Length: 113
Image 1: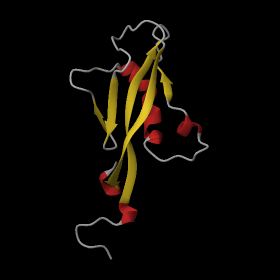
Image 2: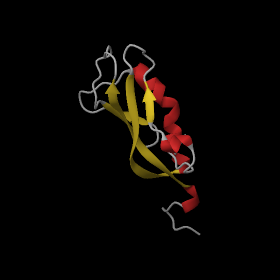
Image 3: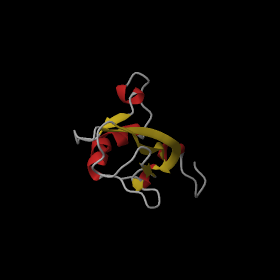
């Protein structure tokens, strides 16, 4: 039996907070992003920009499908565990982003969607 106010271990999920960072731009930056620009995914579903920063939605949409998987522990042999680079879909920019795990967070499973 669990003490009142405590969450049983089975009801806790561990997720990584992530950062999507512009690693390099091999073409011309038409969206105004620069190497080092970033956006953070924290607390399972919250996107945060650095103060005054921006992040192109078209570049971000290329990374979005990978983020839920990168938030979780994956088997060592899984390609997504080893690969963290994503390309923006704009062929003129050739903007390459890197997905980084920035921390690990324990969350109550019932609080997640």
